[in-house]
Length: 134
Image (cartoon, rainbow, N blue to C red):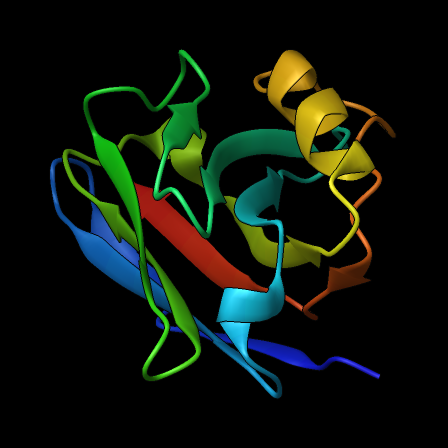
């Protein structure tokens, strides 16, 4: 059983930055892809960033493109999300997820930015809360 633990959430003012981390209990190099997702109060889960962990290829939702950056450190089995120029609309619970078979990766990429039950990743963390004030 893979366990993912997010950290780094908090409260900042609009225009500020936060850096999230997601530590895996197993080798991130064994995953097919990993990603960051978020869920705002009363809304469906939104896929925002995904990385193919072997090639390092990244994908982003339009809502965060140019402001957020996903990265991995396989030596530390950790996934990161650097968030800059934050907006009140970024307020949400942020989750990381890992996919081992690949099927969930392609479908998640195709749905990035959409809110709903679209993201079939194998394992999910419990989330870290990000609050942006105006």
